[in-house]
Amino acid sequence: MKKIIKVNKIDDNLRLDKWLKLQYSALQQSYVEKNLRKKNILVNNQKKQSSYRVVIGDEIKILNYNKEVYKNKILVKISKTIPKKLKEYFISAIIYENKDFILLNKWAGISTQGGSKIKYSVDDLIKDISPSYNLVHRLDKETSGLLIIAKNLNFTKLFGSLFKNQEIEKKYIGICQGSPQNLQSNIDLEISDTKKKNLKQKTQTYYKVLNTQNHISQILFYPKTGKKHQIRIVCKNLGCPIIGDLKYNNQSKFKNEKLKLHAFNLRFTIMNKKYNFYSDLPDHFNEFFKINKLKNIKLNKF
Image (cartoon, rainbow, N blue to C red; front, side, top):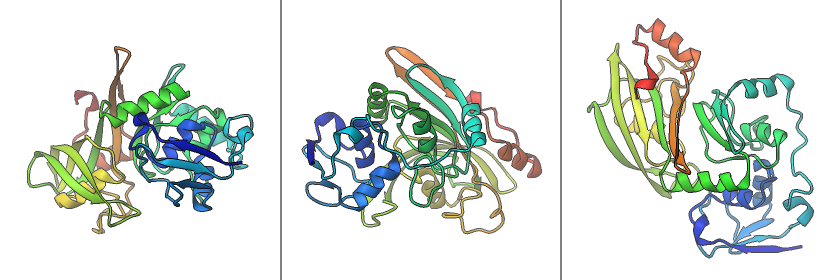
């Protein structure tokens, strides 16, 4: 059976994988990736990657559409058994929860979304709890910090709209090797798509150096846009790559360190209610500060 859907105005510029999971919340990332790869899901009769941004009027064709699968009567999932300890760790990392969404303090080392080479992801963990739970944004695998999980379709769409309209304020702390020329600045930078190098994406990032000692800088980042590896690429271009970044920092002094990038603050307003969440720095940050005689950072000041 075949299903054809046209993209409407409200969904313009969403990632294709996110758009699909908004329509059919039971779908896991691995299922979406597999069917895009096998050309079971086409955009305007063409094969597209999950990162493709849909536009108004795009025709999404699902060639293997099965109502029982796509309408949640059968849960589409890979036969993964989530270890009990991992489930418990996930529960312990929840810093806030209500009937509509969860705030998770994601730990470094777990991918947000699944894939063929990823054993377990946050997406696997939340779908194990409920097929209606959805990721609404992402963090890099080695980046720690605050991650929003919507519990239903309405809040998945609501958060999607807030992110699209830049109505969610995100703040990060990064520990960098060296220091930028200016102590604070707004950086407008075009970066290459991680999969399509010829595709340029505009990014906006504000930064402020909080402290510099021993050629190490503690820097506050406020990204206005949310592109993959955005802050890490900005740091490389500023000449002060993030410590522990094996992709963008080729300096060997701290190559055995974990990535020193943490999403510590999220602020947004829903139905006239203001939310302001903070996440403590992971232990490896504080240990690094102690060893390298750096000042501790009070995150709730920012």
